Length: 352
Ligand SMILES: Cc1ncc(COP(=O)(O)O)c(C=O)c1O
Image (cartoon, rainbow, N blue to C red; front, top):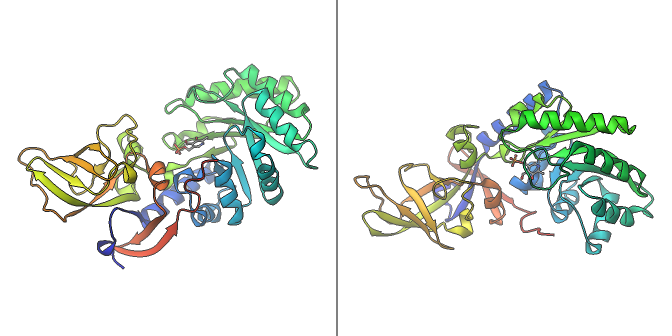
């Protein structure tokens, strides 16, 4: 089948670009002796996680217990869940997952650590827990290096847990601050007789600066596999690196200065990520997808620009690739205009 024969809207992955993105990151990690632990939130596809491992990644990262279950079921062996896990409802699933793969998790408070301890105290094996650190992104994470070391000590003392290290999802552009923060946290741990075996940083925008965080042992990039318009806008990559696009059709041309695509928020999501418009139309970068309804992409066409005929097809580089993956059951892998494979997005929609 050719790309031209696909029904729309559809997600197409340029396999050559994807492979180049994966290889470049792995080579960089190898050159700097950093373990790579890709975040599968971007693709949610077990065979792509296996491809990342085959290229040299040490393990994978998942955000959700349900995503991790899908990956373990497919044979992925080393999984970090980088999200505070709370609540008895997850208990048996978490214990079962820890029996079938090398599992580690994070905590940023005594409450989370105590909940995990209650689940694992009688499990017969210790659950490795990393302390999540807020090195500047102000999402989850303990706020001070001293507090990270104090929580590390609590984790080391709690039954059923072991202290595995430090984890951060840094602010973009915050490499120097992250390096200083983690240096201090490692020193604070040392004063308490604790040595973090793993110091894990993450994110794609600063992926190629990960080695500047001297104490880091691993990095968790996610979006690097596909890239997207937000990375393009930040100057991380070129258009030729963007591997994921949403194929759409012009379904209406109500006026000379606008047209409607069959890709709305259900295909592109509403994530703007600070950008103007909801995606880059590769064939017509001068058009703006200025608004989305569920099924309609509202496009503004500048005066004087050649407008499309109804039925014309376009490729859209979405603002945020990860959320697009969560919206489609299938994505299509293509080379030189031909569809080579369809991937089931097996971990999509795993909210819990
Ligand atoms: C904890 C964590 N690690 C790694 C990543 C991957 O970041 P990126 O998609 O910028 O590569 C994310 C993304 O949200 C994350 O939340």
